[in-house]
Image (cartoon, rainbow, N blue to C red; front, side, top):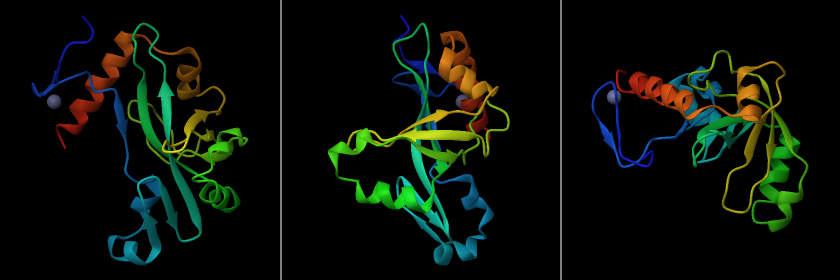
Length: 171
Ligand SMILES: [Zn+2]
């Protein structure tokens, strides 16, 4: 029953399946760069970004839904040290990269429905070739860390989805 189409509560837009994956195309820091300076200062690809001498990468922050067969996923950006950024590039097509220890970073995405997520501590685990890293929140006593560890109910997930879509459909 939970596999049916999804109709947005705010406007009636219908989806083939429940939208459970959300995300941003660039790190939040990007917005602090004036539009006219972006071409000179920003280097942005689908999952990597360099702004001046700051390095960022995109990963998947997974929040398990306890009573459902899919998870809630946010594609987020975190900072990454220059050294690790170069390492990631060197290992881009290396299948053994999944054996790398995780990379530390500060979260650079406002995660919808969660308060104050900028600059909280994370670590990024390399994924198989073709996939972006998995991001684990390690900021203690933060709701995102708690939800990642404990999971959320389907009901809570649906409340988040409704809130996210309502916000998107009104801007
Ligand atoms: Zn809507």
